[in-house]
Length: 360
Image (cartoon, rainbow, N blue to C red; front, side, top):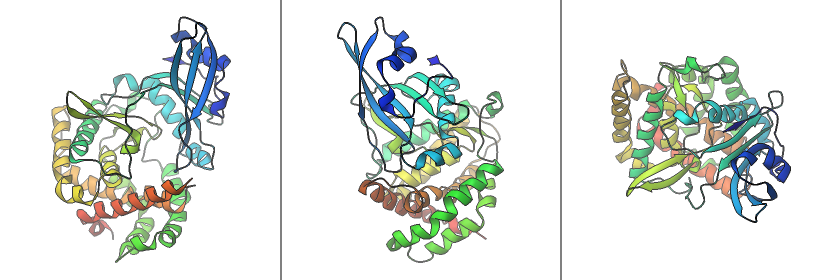
């Protein structure tokens, strides 16, 4: 992959033939003479702007790539505060080649170290079908997502010190930012905007998570660190098959950091699986996750510890539905539907394992 610290853009329309040739031109045996950029969607809480670049070469041949740069909404400032753009560029520079989860090939990655404007150019997966969080994953997809996560975590288990650019989940500045800039401001608007979902003691549970957020966060994400995706859900995956068996291709590595692996799988289950899977398949998926880690060579990690940290992570992953429902620019009607869906599933997931008993 071509690596540069210099060529970044603010809007994908700026991906001109000149920019294309200076970043990915080396991948072609003739110059790129025209670029046509078509949006792949805005809003819906998206933290970046994404488009398909249609390239015309000098001979008339055509090619396509995916172009990614900062969000056009206020979400861009939140993304910069959480280092999302820097994280994804560094993932493609340093981790993608060793990552066991299939990922789109990175063609170019650059980020401005001062303002975090960035440019990421990826291979176009064509007709591969991206997941839709408004539709629950299947049991088979749940199992493969947990297994692939374990392979990722097992690969980098205890190795995070090798990557000096890496940010960590347990970082006081980041934790305070997540609590004070995302969670706290979102709680009451979420309760007001989605009141029908706050039945029983759910509002009290969310308020307790807010009050105890730092303690919950530190325990949930403690233990031996590994590389995590950080935003592991079906909307960030192509749901495919290989030899008739479900497979995933994971993208959107903006939240890549060092942390506890159960965060990824708690996030996936609470965001992408409906209540039936929480009741019927969640524990089997968690056992598969733990068994796969052991097969990967992970030692001194019991299933009981895995389960306990998983339950704590179900509590702190409430930050995402609260953010979508109460803080982020939802973009359009689908954004509101997404907020409703992930909030409902998050409550279902934490209730399925009685996670509220972990609160003081």
